[in-house]
Every structure is written in C-alpha cells, then in structure tokens.
Image (cartoon, rainbow, N blue to C red; front, side, top):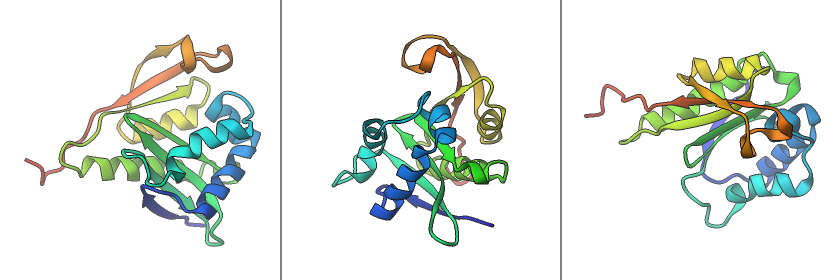
Length: 167
C-alpha cells in the first residue's frame, strides 16, 4: 500500500478524526506523549490544526491510505517537528516519507527552517527517520517536559538545506 501524502496548513474534520483515532492507540500515544493520551491532551495537540483561521506557522504532512484512513502525520510547530505512524504501517517508510517531505517543503522556502525533534533513546526507527531527513543528535534531555514519565529523551536538530535555486 502506497499512502497519499498531502501538505496542509489546516486539517479537515475527517483528517482530525483520523488523527484522534491514531492517538487513541497506546502504541502511538505512549511514544508520542509519553503516556496513554487522554482526550484533553489530544485536543490540545490538534487545536492549532483546527483553528479558524489556522495559526501559522503550523504545517502538516498527512499520509492517508486508499480508503482515506489516516496512517501517519508529520507536523511542524515553530521549530519543533513531530511525527507519528499507525502501528500497522510501521517499517514501511511512511514516517521517513512524511518527515523528509515536510523538511523538503520547508527547505524550498526563502529562509528554510531550523528544526528540532525529541525521541526516546530506545525508539531506533524514529531516530533513523530523523537521521535520514538530515537531523543530527544534539544531546540528552533528562528533565522538564522533554523527560516524559521520567524517561530521558534525545534531542535532534536539523539546519535548513538551501536549494540550488536559492541565492
């Protein structure tokens, strides 16, 4: 199955419902939020995507299956990139395509974008997705919001890539 990738500043109601379904799965929510997500957490995450008008600079890359179900999402808020993929689609390159696609869009802009992302040390697949998109390890986060459930997270950063058409 090859998902369709769609870039957006605002997500449709059906896309938002699909993301809610993804985040209801503990296999997705725990690595993403650090624990099983409650409805308030999910709505806070989705709020900028559903705002009217949408709050820039939030951007999204959505992966949908042929039946229009949401199988993955990459988002950028400010300088923070996050992504998630439905467990049935892990290991198929969807996360890599989402993150690389969104980074390429941002790189094509006049000033590009410096991005950061957090990932649990044990999540080798997500670390690989970030590294494939040009992110580099930048240090360990052991406290604060970045240490969900007392587990340290790895911080990755990516500098903008200037295209050959940019001055």
